[in-house]
Amino acid sequence: MEWFGATEYWTSRLVFQKGLAALYLVAFLTAALQFRALIGERGMLPVPRFVARVPARRSPSLFHLHYSDRFFAGCAWAGCAVSAALLAGADALVPLWAAMLLWLVPWALYLSVVNVGQTWYAFGWESLLLEVGFLAVFLGNDEVAPPVVVLFLLRWVLFRVEFGAGLIKMRGDECWRRLTCLEYHHETQPMPGPLSWFFHHLPKPLHRVEAAANHVTQLVVPFLLFAPQPVASAAAALMIVTQLWLVLSGNFAWLNWVTVVLALPVVAWPSDAPPVAGAPLWFVVVVLAVSALLLALSHAPVRNMLSRRQEMNRSFDPLHLVNTYGAFGSVGRVRHEVVLEGTADESPREDSDWREYEFKGKPGDPRRLPRQFAPYHLRLDWLMWFAALSPAYASPWFGGLVERLLENDPDTLRLLRRSPFPADAPPRFVRARLFRYRFTTWRELRETGAWWERTYVREFLPPTRLAAGSGRRT
Image 1 (tube, rainbow, N blue to C red):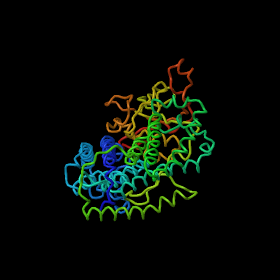
Image 2 (spheres, rainbow, N blue to C red):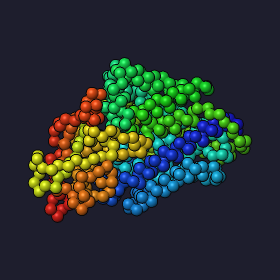
Image 3 (cartoon, rainbow, N blue to C red):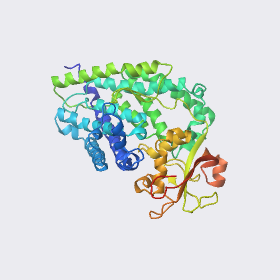
Image 4 (cartoon, one colour):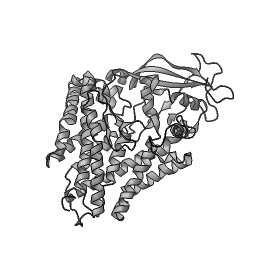
């Protein structure tokens, strides 16, 4: 069955699999290090409470069968181990069927995490990692050439990621049509990086060039993915360059990196493929059956892309097999940040000794340059950005965060850069205030050393304490 395999994409498959394994490793490491405070037994949105009210058919997960923090940690670290093994090339050392099972393990484990992760895992790149990870199961190993149909489906995913993002921009905020969105975006994006201040201060004509280039890359170039080589390789290379530009300009977890990984198998890499036998019949049947299923399921995201009411980042099935994607359909003009503070004073007053909690990634101290964390995902920092947009986004979990700060909960404090209170002396009161943040000018930076200028807007949460003996806030 020479038509089934594409030996010229041997190296393309290899670099794709290595990149995907690395992203799986980051995703599982993020889960292992953060879950206790977020969704653990004593987390802000506990998994046991979720699985008690949501049936398994709506959120398939191992944790419907059993949950404990120890079991979750075991699954997360097992995911890290399997991902590291795949990164080291373990799939090439086992038979084809075993390699498929090896790639199925991280997909199933991460699906279990995402489907109970609730708000903390409601990001488009979670579904994207799962959709791409499922396709990787059927790419084969060194026993067979990469299946043509799976390579096509990977391009189909990349097309939907880019084209969907382009459509949502053109249909959404008018600043995209006027080419002015990037005059605001670098300052108001969820988590700026160390170069975001400099990107923000690029000349306005260059911002317009950025926006126009984005439209070309997302609305025109995706169609070239299905062109003959070397046109398809050139299209993929242009997408990779665009994504690396975004990597430099901000922190978007692994969204940019998984898009880069998706583009890698499109490129016709120089290849010296070893001679291989034809694919076994059972493998051909399985791959074609799964491909037919995925193409049939694709009608939902296609219908969504063609709709005037296009949605961003939605899964159409509980297994996240085929999804719709998009980003920044609207761009904020003003940046707000929620600043959390605590005091040990018996009676909270405005002149009390209020001490600010410092987060790892989100803006806080105006003199602190934003750091680079992506592809690692700081989930609490990202949700704090949504909280600043509207208290409604934070209502399910913000109260739990405040309670744990009042308790000096060690798992929660590990999510922060620094707590202003000793481990044995928690604050008596915690409050939250809303500030407007803007990047300083070149002159202000030279004079003050501050990257941000912030202005108090209003109270977000009044001083709150734990009720005596109840462990609940009042």
